[in-house]
Amino acid sequence: MAEEFAKLIDSLLAEKSHASILTAASLMKEIMVSDQSYCNKFAKHSHFLVKTLKAIIGTGIASEYEIGNVTDPFLQVSVL
Image 1 (tube, helix red, strand yellow):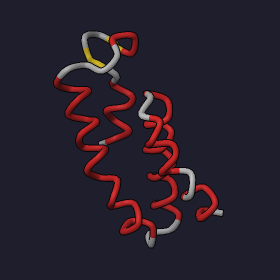
Image 2 (image 1 turned 135 degrees about the vertical axis):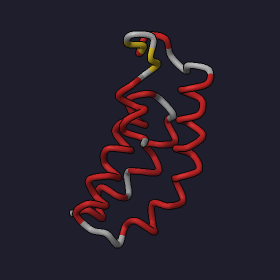
Image 3 (image 1 turned 60 degrees about the horizontal axis):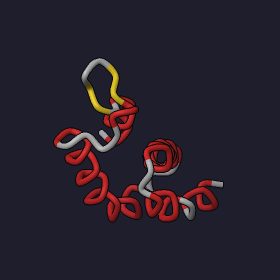
């Protein structure tokens, strides 16, 4: 079942929206917990996720997701 969901990761990250990145990060985490062989397969996405995290912290990609002067805390935690 993990391989079916793993195929969706690339398309979710390609959308680059708040919801799709949050979903992809959560999905990757759950897949890696259930099957550790995916850790190496998902490593190619680490550069994009670090770049996204820097953008959230540095510039604030969307103010509508700001909570208590923290830009998009749920996405930040999910990416970490």
